[in-house]
Length: 426
Image 1 (spheres, one colour):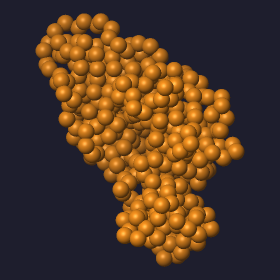
Image 2 (cartoon, rainbow, N blue to C red):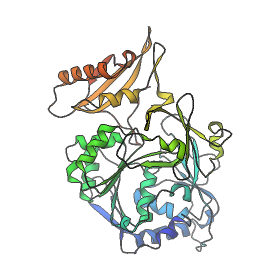
Image 3 (cartoon, helix red, strand yellow):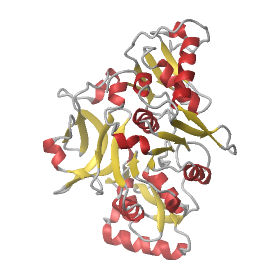
Image 4 (spheres, rainbow, N blue to C red):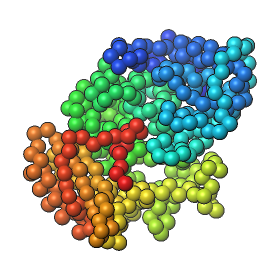
């Protein structure tokens, strides 16, 4: 997909609603049309005309300001850094100035930079072109009838994907990226959202709220974490006519591939046949490696081999028909020299009826190095002691001895990071 983001939007009817959002937590939804977004973006570009061909950071007051900044500076500035609000700008970056000048619409091949991490240390900046970011965006005519819900922070890769999908397809975007889970869900319902992308952890919270049936979803997307079979089955039953897919993507690799068959993992055939322009391989350590037609940037040089494959650092298991994700290589729990993948244990625990959510982590042990610990969120009207007993019995049947949680605790809720992913204890 070529052209600037602003140019791609110009084909949509100007009066069509592009965005609905709350200016404060308790305010009603405000509607912004495509024409209004374009006008605001051009005004913003004129005010910062001295930054043409320069690098800029994108900070924002609200989602409307964020989108207007993307429209204004893509194709105009050389680089766009989508900054988490608690990060500092990279050295040498220019801040947006306000000098009124004439609008010079000279095309620029902008580079979009996203931070891989903003929680600890200095974030790693990964650059993408707009074409790379939108290579899986659907432009089908029916796409403009959808109403997308945004539950991710927009400066993160997953959130940006939702924003771009909505804008380029001509759909309407409902911003539910702030507030507690009840506030966000109420916003989705009030906005009549029909398409929603969220992490498996967020989906579980929506289901746990008991209000999921209030949404009339036509398209469901899962990403950012392992999509386990019980969750896929439950969503299929709740929304039987909706398109259900889970996406493997990362800030480093960009959007990689989507799976639409309702099964966990992805078909093993991909290892031999590939997926469009994507090639796969699995090494002796069970790391998944990817290679696509676009070259990976210099930021990833240490993780790219001589053949151009990128080490995703995700661990997988090969079965006769599927490639199943086990978790991150860096997240392994070491129990007496035996490696335990917390996500794998979580998937087993989540098979037990009455378990709404689960977190598995390692706790230091002077004897074994680490012990496997588990926290559960119970479904309503579930007796915690009985649930713990069922989980223990199921784990003893499905897991090896070193994988079985040493201690299981029922908690009221599990915290989610700003990315929508479960907070990992390390």
